[in-house]
Length: 224
Image (cartoon, rainbow, N blue to C red; front, side):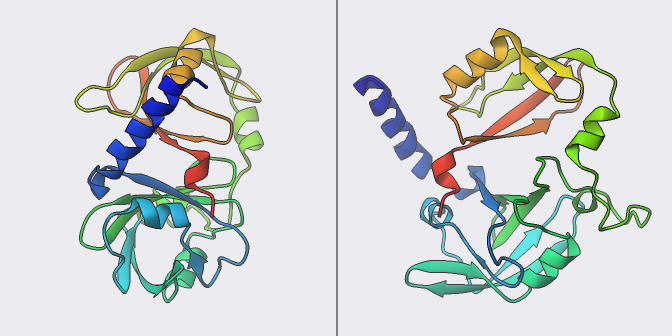
């Protein structure tokens, strides 16, 4: 990688650190013994400018909220009391992931993703008792139930200053869903997407063309 690319990355890192915490997303994979207590990744703590209080609130997309205790030590921060209830409620398993977005006043919005990368329905559906908590279909089952087809979709890169860039790609849906043609390659190159990085796709409402915001979480941001 050329020195100019390294300087661009350094400038981007410095600019990111100065962003308000409300504009940042964090991904936390469920690893090891997370059921009763969870150590927050070091990168999460370093990039979050605010202070972690003794208790925070986690709110899922269906509007339910949970109070979770925070244990602060010199070398780490951990979620403790109340965390086990959150884990049990949403039936979290190893390799599931949580995407955090700070909402102010010790309050985080949380998106819950299964190990296959799609949202857990119980964290989105409001008071829907018809969906069993422990029934989760694998991504293969879901994809095989869809007839193979190709749709045009647009992706929007993370906003830089005032505007975000749009990239058009083809989404081929079959046993495996693939983003094809030059749009995806241009998006990956323009946003320096690398092996191990994670792209979180957010579907936008309205319009004839499927449009998604893409939030990029770098591999080094989720490492302990």
